[in-house]
Figure 1 (cartoon, rainbow, N blue to C red):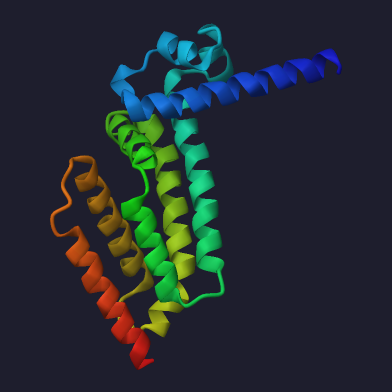
Figure 2 (tube, rainbow, N blue to C red):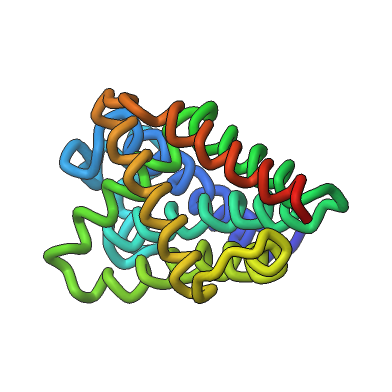
Length: 197
């Protein structure tokens, strides 16, 4: 292996270790509990590498969210592309929403709160939001017609995004009141529309 290849491999390993550590710390300690030294210690690398490779701790954290989002967006696109009725895709998506752990939600909301006062971060977080809206737009365009939902597509996507966001925020706060009833109502609505097609 050449010196350049070794350096490239070492950098890649260190960057991955820092992103993995940032993901764990965002979930376990939140943004306010992360310092450059704590992040480097968790990653098992020299603390100088945080700024050397990423420029700032905020860049590490946003890149962590972007990487996490890429994995989940790929999963969602595959799910919505499956050759099964839309209602089954919806049910799977809702199981993902309420049955999985809350790691992604914690990372996403920690960074959203951070970006409220940091305009330079808002663009990158808006890009993450746009990825989710794109997944839903592609998935819901045919479903909206199939189920006879008389609502502009953009409005439908916005409704589902804000609905999901509300459930996520409440779950992280320990509140689940009415969630199951709401999901059951939506499922019944979709099932009824599915049967009437």
